Image 1 (spheres, rainbow, N blue to C red):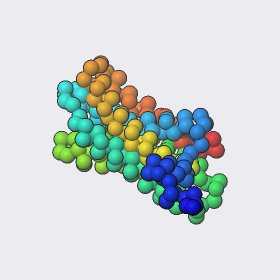
Image 2: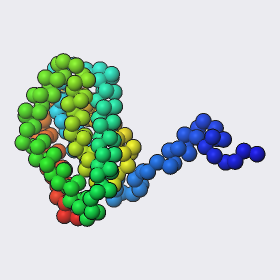
Image 3: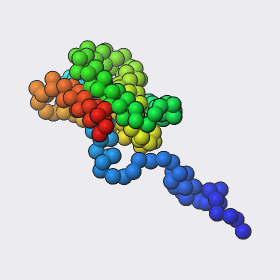
Image 4: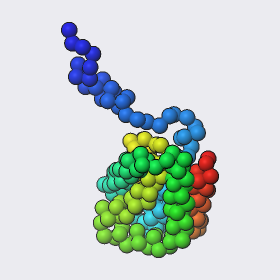
Length: 206
């Protein structure tokens, strides 16, 4: 008689058994709300790039959306793993402070260099989508580091950030094609303020 183990299960049961062993975040509003806010504010650059592309009445290829999604998700997930490795060398009371400091720095950088970054991403967009995907993923590296120090799962964090990267790029392009974009100049400041506010909250032990 076969003992109950992963090897004795059906393919679908094996997948479920493996996934059930992965470390995931607790499903509660206290941890989910900051995660969604981080995912949204981390991708304000994508909205800006999509708006500029949509204003030209051009559509973003689905292959490009998948590239941005995949590279953004992988980079943020790997960054979470990297910060998880660093956590073993740091005292626990410093973790939220470091995470908050990273969010504040990313927010300040996004606010200060928003115009330069948009022009840079648009230049990459005219070359190859892979270059743009890599450029947009740089923000996700910092977000992943912050997420790791806050204790989020690399799998969940990577999936959510990756999906948010592709969705915000698509929505930005859609809005640029169909809606008035006079509020475009406010996208980066609002996203930056959100990051700074979350960073201050975490830094002071939220």
